[in-house]
Image 1 (cartoon, rainbow, N blue to C red):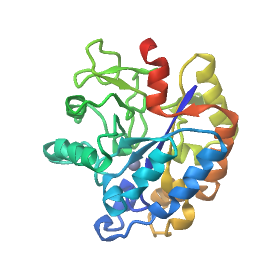
Image 2: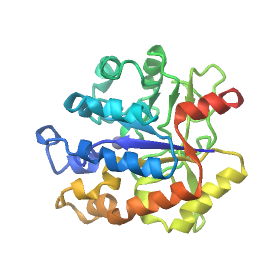
Image 3: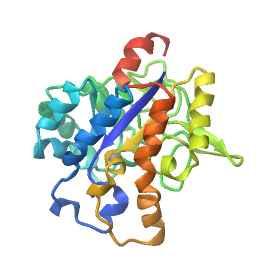
Length: 280
Ligand SMILES: [Zn+2]
């Protein structure tokens, strides 16, 4: 059994786009795309966890009822899509967790850091999440890339603590679910979704999932809501590299995701924990 997280955020939330547009001045559009995403999950018989940027709930509170009503789960993706290691974010993170709990009736038990920004400089977040009764985190990409990642981190779920973020700490209070990686032309790279789903041949993604299944490891997969609804996304002029990371094959993301969900079984984080938690 594999695990699917949907990073539910708008087109203006990614860090790369925030270099070009003022995200505070944008009107959310992604809420219009929620039905299409729920439909994809329904037709592929999949339950997922939605890691939501909190300001979207403030804008349209009924998205929570729709997501929970369809049997899915909710996780926290910060209030405004802020990197954990942003200056002074530590001072307001606890207040944001509490604000998100208020907006969601305390339903969130899991966290994903924007841009996988959980690292040695931001590991304090684990303690704050634990203090707020969080159960799991899924922010570790266990390979180093130019943008993020922690090379050498454990690839199977483990107990994480603020003093030991990359491998099991028996005293850790949260379960960490590291994201799927694979070997590609002799190099270990992420294969967990997002840009990599768009960039890699489908056969590479599917072989990566198969390899994890063979090893009885959950393939932890992610997709951004804006990748599944490119019709809601304006085309912003950016540098070649930024444009490539943001838009490459974006029109194919939905079909590729659908194909992955039809080929393998995925579930939400809390469902996975309640079934396999005692073995972790
Ligand atoms: Zn995000």
